[in-house]
Length: 505
Image (tube, rainbow, N blue to C red; front, side, top):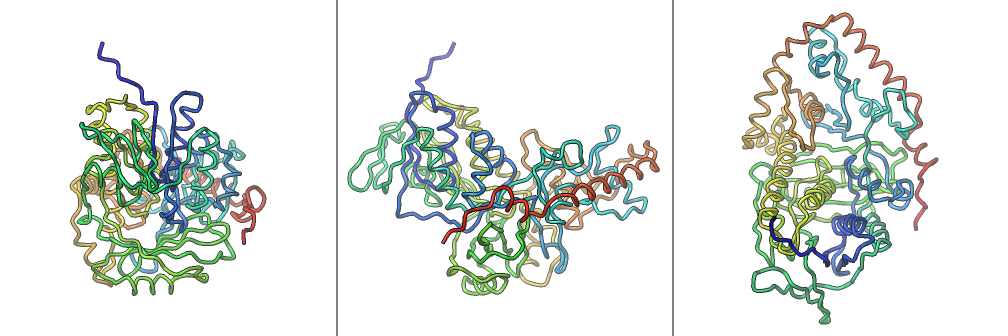
């Protein structure tokens, strides 16, 4: 038997915002009926970047796991539903494709659906891959419904996410976490005090208040107040793989129709997002400063809006990458303090939740075992690399050569892990997922197909199946999805019926 470690009794979270309050909610839920204290310190001098944020289905899972009423959350955060992302002009100008959640088709006699689709394509069947994705069909028709109401139909197991107002989410989760017993302290951290072993011992706020803790969670944003400024964890930049290093953001007025998906449009020196909320849109342009200046980027973004802007554009510099130690001693970094991957696939909140899940799995005592730290950091690094490779995929497969930025993307350096994956896929469509990979084969298949990357062959074991029966099955599946989707209410009708936000001045 090893030595017993002393349990952590006092958590201190530095920084509110989405990351801080997700951490507070997660820990508050776990320790709700215990003697563990959780205190969140947030400064009113630091604002939230509340321009509209997109999520993935795991955020909906987080709400349910936390005991939060989904309809109430949607109403109070002015949220809308999301089936996926439409990528406009990425392969070529004038073309678009969808990357949605959930599976495509279903396996037949143990054969992967994508291989069956490749066989049908080789036989001359022109049916697009996404005609077999319920989420893609719902997105293309701009429909929504509650999946559990579609039991027994092809829509029964669909996956959806949400578009959110980050400021309202922070406010909502702040109230909810405090109802679980989390203590909120307003103050600006003046000094971080460490013990002789280099562990953080306490924080001194402006005004002199001292807050002691046994474990600290850094949600202080890009500055990394604890993890970097105090512990010097270091940062691994991935700018050689992801050339964009700035974003300009602006909210705009609500459109007449609310789309049930995010739109990511390729621009001259990067890409822009449009995130529809119930009462406005969030917009941004992620770009490479090597190819365009801030003022020109802001002009391009404003010119691209389909509704009037509601504020002045705001520029946010960033460096893609990850802290060399995300968990160092008795400090865990979350959100922007942890690392940054551009929001192309809406993974920011997912990485907060995944980090917390890893942390809970390796939950330490006050000694913060170095063995646990190493394994946590290794796994989280793998998560970041997997998402990084998926983001690079969107750039390196472009056929655009109309601007210096896109020509550079065609020549860009590629991580070996991505090069190996693409090489394997180009043979006969093989994609071997890791156990904890976030992007499963269906996601890679949608993006690769959308970008025009196709395997040379399909897996010949599919030839053992009766093709005429396969063709009938494919046609029937496609028709059933289309019919079931057509019967559902529009996205706006659904929201107005079930979860419409109150009008705010």
